[in-house]
Amino acid sequence: MRVLLSHFRARLLPLSLFGLLLVVSQALAQAVPTPQPQPQAMIPAPPQIAAKSWILMDADSGRVLVEHNADERLPPASLTKLMTAYLVERELNRGNINLDDRVRISENAWRTVGSKMFIEVNTDVSIRDLLHGIIIASGNDASVAVAEHLAGGEAPFADMMNQHASRLGMHNTNYANATGLPHPEQYSSARDMAILSQYIINDYPEHYAVYSEKYFTYNDIRQPNRNRLLWRDPTVDGLKTGWTTEAGYGLVASAKRDDMRLISVVMGTSSEEARAQETQKLLSYGFRYYETLKLYDQGAVLNTPRIWGGEKNELRVGVDRDVAMTLPRARNQELSARLDIRQDLTAPISLGDRVGTLEVRLGDEIVGEQPLVALESIEEGGLFKRLFDQVRRFFSNLIGGWF
View 1 (cartoon, one colour):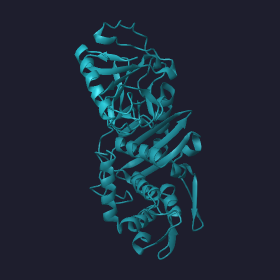
View 2 (cartoon, helix red, strand yellow):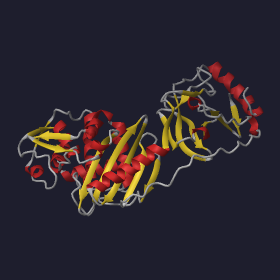
View 3 (cartoon, rainbow, N blue to C red):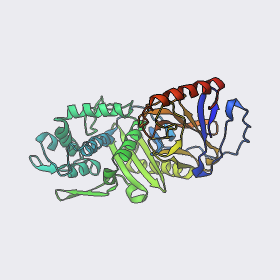
View 4 (cartoon, one colour):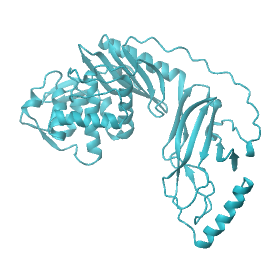
């Protein structure tokens, strides 16, 4: 159905996959009947969390469900190693390094204080083992070794970390080292840790299984993963713990139940047991009272608006990524979606060009917006076709409708 809303060509789209109600605006600003209010699902207040800062985020939609002091800058301790591991995974994905590459261990890396993987000076250790040592054993020695291998030293590696933190939108983070050892210029926030974890999970899923491994053995030394929830909750499969005297105990965790994945971050708890218990509270609350629905698939055709002066008269329009929304349970009947498509689309159009916006509402609240893109390229038509379309467009604009 082609509809004109004010001076924009727009579309109102039903979320048919979920049996949602279609709200249609009639052409030429006809009145829309006011929908009857529906009773909202009852969501209790979030649990009290004994931490300086915390956040609960849906990994697919990025929606924050609950938070407290989520932007406060705090020492991250070994949560820092999430960025160290992320950069290793990124270099692996780009083909710049290989899991079987060997790294020569310097005396500087070997002497690094704190938690260790127990690598030995002047030995060659694989990237695969170093990545396991960073994630599972929280090895400071392994972190320095990869920093030296990838950037020539820990200081230039910290500069890389900061560049990528800025790229990912981590606005309250600054790195001074690859380990998380105390430094006055090293800080992060619960929100930034959740954002980074979302990228780790979604960008490099082929490496994510490492975060769920309970033990790692190297040099005949077997070390357990410090994330206690890996033993207590089978749906938890990551990510990282941290502790220093200054930072207290922190935990970034992720769990998946059915088709919903949550990320929780607690920073500044009082003990190993406290960080596990407070994280479990957050995850239980999120899974019990919220759900994540996949609304549209990447590449799905959502509309076919008129395009002028092209080889074809209609353009296939959709989204270039999966669209998911997180909402309180039992409120999916309140979802509606609207396509706002750019006026007077004219060839040539290239695959991926933005042509409008998909807006998703929960009742009166906008809960998500995604770019609408061209799902195909359309070249200019011949001279006669372009002239004919110019005439048709003139009369179409003149009468305010489709001609």
